[in-house]
Amino acid sequence: MNRMWNMLIKPRLEPLKIILLRSLNARMHLTDKDVSNYTILKKGFEGEQKSDVWLEGLSEGWLVLHDLLLEYNNSKFQIDTLLISQDKIYPLDVKNFEGDYYVEGDKWYTSAKKDMKNPVHQQDRCVILLRSLLRELGYPYPLEPYLIFNNPEFHLYLTSINPSLVFHSQLNRFLKKLNARPVNLNKRHYKLAEQLVAIHKVEPPYPYLPGYHYEEQEKGILCPRCYFFFSGMQGLILMCGHCGCTEGVESAVLRSVTELMLLFPDQKITTKIVQDWCKIIKSEKTIRRILLKNYKLNRNGRSSYYSQS
Ligand SMILES: [Zn+2]
Image (cartoon, rainbow, N blue to C red; front, side, top):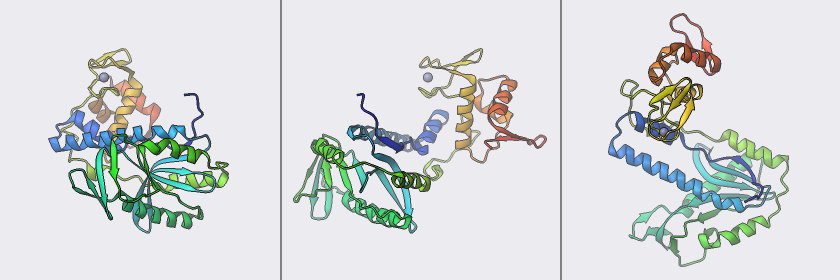
């Protein structure tokens, strides 16, 4: 498809929780529960990525912000996708539900007649908070929220029509409707998008991770493709015996240092610790050269360490 991509201001990034669980899974023994939690998170993220694809049909000029965590009046709320057009803002909640669901009165049930959270209520709460936040920021644009069910294998038994629900078979028409909206955005719209990205909250992943210690982690450099450890080195190139991937030593060390910093935010980064962490690189000189080139050395005799700035 040669279509110009609409203006994407905030892409959907892989959550830190998943990145860190992937490292831990490679470097230590996780319980079955932790592995299943990791698998669920990963599948959820892949589903979200897939569910962004239909938006490619949106005409040029829209501002698209994915995965915002915002706060108003001490209440946090999450917006799956926010579309900014000229005169309206569209908060979209995209659900990848599969199977049959029922609505009776105000309640939603799965096909097994299990109670579930009513996604309309969840979205109403977000919209109320978003409206107040936008007003406070000085952008009282009207909001038009939609709940998008983009899985073709989803069916909802409804007793009344709710125009804010969009099903898979309606997505094309919904896109056409959006594409008919004016999108002559001005500086103010861009400023709003930038402001929302700036106040987006990043939740620390640590409370969601299992307990772990430096000593119990298997040391080595993980292959960025298959997450097995690099097993060979030739000159300044590392090789993965599992998938055949190769990577330059510098980029592999820097990736591993970032991983170390994320897993152990209190750990001081020294040549010695990085050499221990990377394991496969025997030359202390190589590690020191890479660290000196990419980080700031805080000189303090034997307790000198490297930092990002
Ligand atoms: Zn590999």
